[in-house]
Image (tube, rainbow, N blue to C red; front, side, top):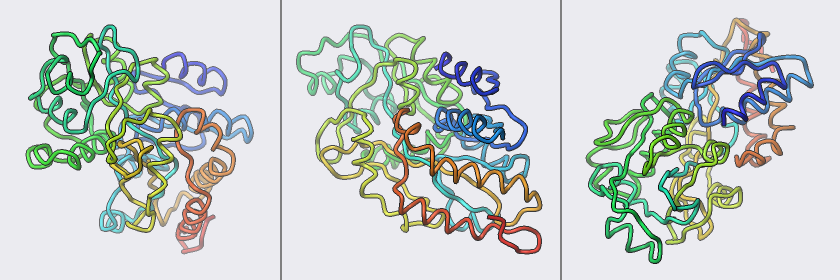
Amino acid sequence: MRKFLMIAAASCGLAVTGIAGAVQAADMTGAGATFPFPIYAKWAEAYKKETGNGLNYQSIGSGGGIRQIKSKTVDFGASDMPLKGEELDAAGLLQFPTVMGALVPAINVPGIEAGKLKLTGTLLAEIYMGTVKKWNDPKIAGINAGLQLPDININVVYRSDGSGTTFVWTDYLSRVSADWKSKIGANTSVQFPVGVGGKGNEGVAASVKQIANSIGYVEYAYAKQNKLSYALVQNKDGQYPAPTIESFQAAAANADWNAAPGFGIIINDQPGAKSWPITSATFILVYKKTDKVEQAKEVMKFFDWAYKSGDAMATDLEYVPLPANVKDKVRASWKSIVDGSDKPIF
């Protein structure tokens, strides 16, 4: 991942600072979710080459992105947890999705290659609750016949910062485990009973890579770029699909984008034999009424360009582009963004 980020930085004038990283330029500012950072970095690289206009995106987590847009210190915020309609209305914000992606349980267990270990959602909940403690626990061994599992403790890694990724992960666990739902629940930050924290998808990926016999949840692009092993997860139909663009698309196929204000749907635990079970959209937050008209115009031009020209780049990084009809609905929603005189800016 570090190599990937530094290549992006070198090729388009981006600067990467700290473990979270940031896309540096002068024209647009954004902050928030680490989940989409790899694709935002790639889009920013191509957009700067094509237009000369840059993006400064700080990968600080969804909670930070929501705080920064509400305090008006950035041109847009980014969150993997969609805000509800009443919160959007209260803050005067417009919300729209950019791409869809998926979370995987990244593992670092000597001798176990990517995609060889199988886990159920219930097992993941029990591991993160600390009730399944060892890799050779009979519950794990029972669905992994022939796999040599070590008699050693599982080292759990979670997000230490307020995170939409944590919301997606805990929402999934709440859907598949009544025990998790009643005792811990779904939120951007929860009290994990066991484990150690890492900041951002970057930090969790780095911790899993460094800590033997560990497991952590990360966006698939981070697992791929860091060459991390991962477990397969049983889906709603009882199958164990591989995490691929096809399985992510299968999960997204049933999405009803009209089901919530601001396109704020949750795609976890979708039916379908080929569906990857932990899948989510990621969202942008902008003000409906702005006095920073030129910055707002440039932000909308950037995401309009990404919708038109960014799908192949997204697919290369294992994200799922939005369907064309959803993009059209999103563009229609942008007409509600106005300047101080209530004149549409885009």
